[in-house]
Image: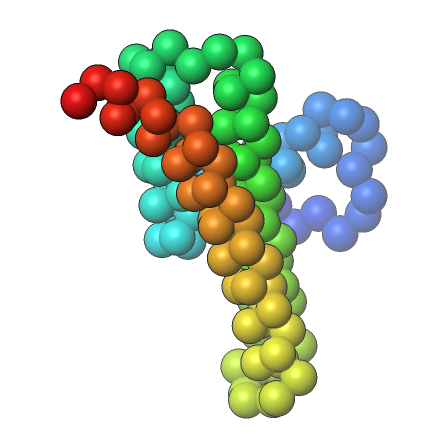
Length: 129
C-alpha cells in the first residue's frame, strides 16, 4: 500500500487483494537491501540452472529454495516493522528476541538454499572442469 492508500477496511475483492500484495512485494524490494540481494541471487540461480540444463526435479528444489528464502525475508520484514511500530523504536529485550528469531528464520532458509544449490550445481560445475 502506498502513502496515498488510506484504506482501513477489508479488501472488497480479489483484485484489490492482489494489488495490495503486489504493492507489498514492490515495497519490500525497494526498502530492504537484503531482499534485493536475495532477488539477485535468485536470478543468478535461475540463469545458472538454465545454463547447466538442470532437470525437472532439480528445478523443483531450486524453486522451493528460492521461494523459501523470499518468504522468510518477507516474514522477517513484517516482524521488524511490527516490532518497531509497537516499541516506538525503543529498546526492549523481547523485541530484540523477536527480530533476532525472525532473522534466524531467514538464515536457516538461506542455508537450506545454499545446500540445495551445492548439491545441484557442484557436480555439474566439477564435470565442466
